[in-house]
Amino acid sequence: MFRRTVRLVAALTLAAAATLVATVTSAAPAHADGCYTWNRQLSEGMSGEDVRQLQIRVAGYPGYNAVLTIDGAFGPGTRAAVTRFQQAYGLGADGIAGTQTFNRIYALQDDDCTPVNFAYSELNDCNSDWSGGAVSAATARANALVNMWKLQAMRHALGDQQIRVTSAFRSHACNNAVGGSASSRHLYGDAVDLGAGPHSLCTLAQQARNHGWREILGPGYPGHSDHTHVAHKSSRTWSASSCGVS
Ligand SMILES: [Zn+2]
Image 1: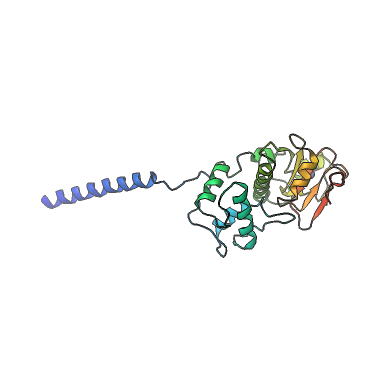
Image 2: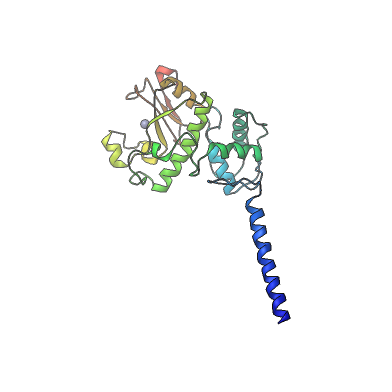
């Protein structure tokens, strides 16, 4: 009887302690982001999924005429992109992603991992499931996410004024309906057409050279008098002769 009571008290004490630990843990100051939370400082030479997640967020900071490889390996290109991101937001620019850098990213992203000023729905007015393109739906959607982070970087560089997306992902059916090229990057989810708004089409085409797009087509290129097209591509194709972009 006595032994059973002791065991019961011990069990209740353990349960209370577990509850206390759970309460303390959830109230801890460590940031828990709705999309993704980094748990260690990241610097050159490291690798992993957390590096890859970081690379997506700084993909818009590769420097002029460059593209950041998103491969989960923190090399010199990633260090330079992190440094540019830090400079863009007035943080200590050391190329090492720590608490300040991650907190800035948390403030910039929604719970679905898109940057605050862009949304999946904006990058796909063709269908709701990203199917029917030249790549799997998951790949098309992932490509669109990287493009949104590039757009967020360009938006910030241009004074945080709106950038208007007029067309992005297209299935083959949607691409045919608008007379798009059979090899259009829109079929891959990694092309975005931008309309004039606060910024002219030429301002967009010129600024895009700094944010990781190998394909830029704008005013002066056939069929592009009313939008500037930016996309990922293996080789560089810049053509907006009316804007001095070539
Ligand atoms: Zn286009």
